[in-house]
Length: 252
Image 1 (cartoon, rainbow, N blue to C red):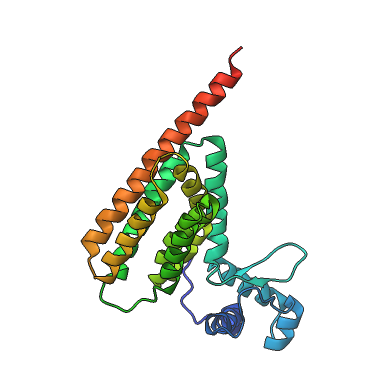
Image 2 (cartoon, rainbow, N blue to C red):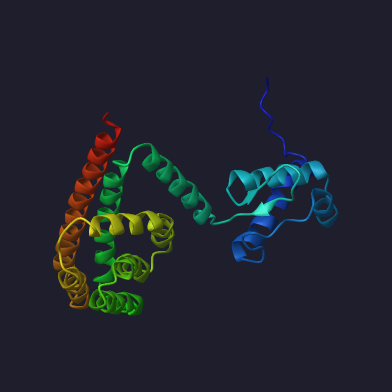
């Protein structure tokens, strides 16, 4: 087999040219996520090429992760479809948890990694909007005063989510948002184990916030790690108590 050394015919480049134009429209935002491309025949007429060239162009875009094709449907733009990917990841995590609740403790390790690094971003010297963090703290205070366990744990989860969002890292926020339901459930479970007062729990979060405001990365991270490590231990106790209860219920 001899190597081809001549200039390839122009028609061999047609699909690449079509792919390049459509890719440019996607990257510029002219074609938004969720938009459907025209049919292959419409694109062929628009570019003056064959439907085969259009099909090959779409295959290039699909390989790059810019579009998705489904049988019987028009091609859909999915550029930056991180949310869908993370949603799939979150589903996988939920399936693992269903199979073995002890995976919840591994989720706590993920939380610790994410939320510790977030504190580096929040104390880097750049300006970050902590309004939602402050709102969550206020909601925690009000719920604690009213001895409202459900609202308190919801505000607790909102505090951690607000910290991640305040860091301004979109990918990190998308990732955390897709695990947020799981994190909320973990917080609800762990909060039911210890005898810590609402006031003490609120003050733990307030101390982290104050270290962030002071630009004290090491102090904030130390407090956050201790907070999550304690929650992980409470979670372990809750899982063991649940397993023990299940064993007792199954004994004749």
